[in-house]
Length: 189
DNA sequence: TATATGATTCCCT
DNA sequence: GGGAATCATATAG
Image (cartoon, rainbow, N blue to C red; front, side, top):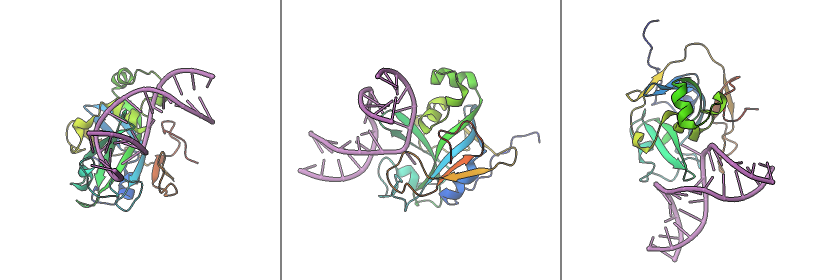
């Protein structure tokens, strides 16, 4: 292969399917990023989802066209990145929780103020800091500049488990991870 | 208008 | 292992 292929992710699929199929894809922002190793699915019927109580000023992007970025402020400090999916108006998304840093390592280290590769993108807030993602990216298409989404280069094995850092629907196994990756925000068991 | 809270991370003990 | 930092948003009054 000579030309990088765009990841053929169908964002009209369910958030669970999208979350699983994103594992192993490469996400870049202005050429900086890496391999997606951890995601979580959130759905309209899901008490843990921002979209559960219907559209608001904050979450309205989740109810718009699929394949766009939904970005929100977490704990007053961090930005978190989601991909909108399912049919328009449904209110479903996939949280990007961790990357294996591949491109622009030096830029990422400066942004993160950290040298240890394992901790550069291991967590949703860390991913956004490393890639320079803020609310200015909210609503942008994730396969158009400055974003790039590339398909996995080889076969990968995906782990499944309960989601992290939420207080509702904590038994729902909608967290997905790249098997054996040392770049997960937390291990699967 | 006012208050409570969180899809987190970092630093201290 | 525990708690602080810090603020946009949601919800109540």
